[in-house]
Image (tube, rainbow over all chains, first blue to last red; front, side, top):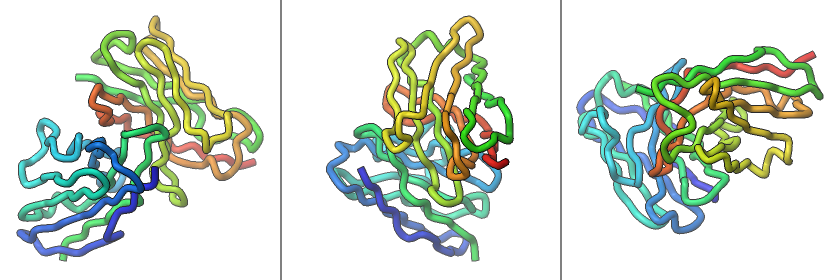
Length: 106
Length: 119
């Protein structure tokens, strides 16, 4: 299943609200996860099941959407949010990832 | 708290077999409803799911790897392993081992290990 993320990169100011979109080629039945990868580190789980916040993740991160269209929102971006964000579908194997969205701070 | 650590050669020659091991600490690989998973990341292809082995021993692989993958586990050592045969330069990547949860989200991940395929 192909998943397409947009945009591929974005620049935001501290305190901005940021939205990243993931679109799938078929209905994922909400089997959609979001990860954050900081430079030199492994990806870290942020959101699972489209909208459930993983324990320990700041509440400024949220996920929404259903079927084929999903969104990751960061409310009030912080400097430590500089990273690349990936969506992943786990509706059917082989599980596939989006191409990533690189977030920079202005 | 479960932690994972990859180990293995950082350089493999073309046509040879890439072999990596993931050591799991803080939890047993033979208990619970988990999938022990390999994922790789290259500049050219981004994040690519390689395959997984369930606590019960069943496996799933990515067909794009053309049948070159084998994932196995050793509960006595609390490890699971990846073998990728007939490697080419296209298999150069950072390889991650990870745990896939009952909700099919991947957490946690190992730190990753770079494997370069070159003569």
